Image (tube, rainbow, N blue to C red; front, side, top):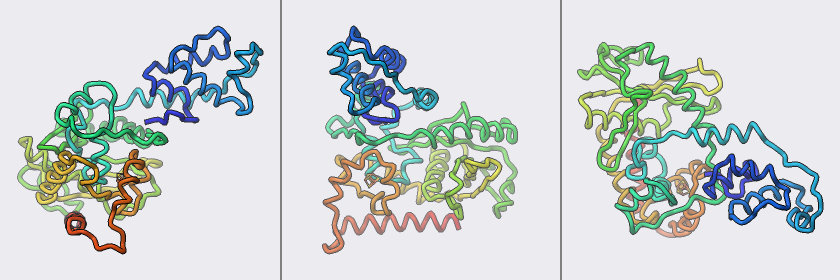
Length: 367
Ligand code: SF4
């Protein structure tokens, strides 16, 4: 979500926050200054304010216009950047289901409290809010932090690589044996857990993964494929634990919801700078991790308050918090955490032990 007072994209922020078309806001801004220009709507006032902020701070534009002084300076355009930003926001992926009703495989390995905030995010209009309100009408809704900027760069990078390189390449290689990929991607659900795998490769020889030391992929003769683009600065000695958790959920849901029985998933990391640099890892399905993921999804979705869930992002060192939209509400809750001078309560202890066990299981599976 773009900040209401964004200085990088001031007019886009007005369009988003006042629910008016971006083109209308820009057209209106282009007509400033004009003494006859209407300023009756809140979005028009906000556009004037944004315009004002762009000018030299010592100039009081409003006063100048009212007093009839001719204003001669022009709005500074950031044309291409704003065009890219507007396009990226309009091209955001539209999901065919209400994502607030389940915890996705890509979210389940992240901070549980953050997932709670996301599932109970305040959405002003639309089907999503109505659908979610029906089942959880007594739960408080949370707004993202005012200064939080939902950068689209990494997401767009992933989509471009997936749609224009990864999927076409795999289609060419596996032809009709690549299913549930590209336009045929399928979302699967069980209880409060959901997943949308990148693809499933079927009808393969049982030794197809022998290059990875897997002699037999099992009777199902299929395996899940998951494509990731990755910043070259990220060390990749092993698959990222959240991605490992994600493919366990995908494998489990495919096994439970379809006729296919994959036992392995192949995660491929494509270097975001040099796409010919690809690192791959094979993960074997672990039913215990899948079972734990379903329990975890239920805990997140049935919690009545974020306080019921540990701030795992912060406990893990705070890296995830840097990209969290709910730092504000979580900060307040953080003050109630047990500190090192007080004894840790049993519930907290049990949850940390549980998390460590899950992590060990993931590590063992990878080995
Ligand atoms: S701020 Fe950190 S601990 Fe709190 S919800 Fe966000 S990721 Fe979790």
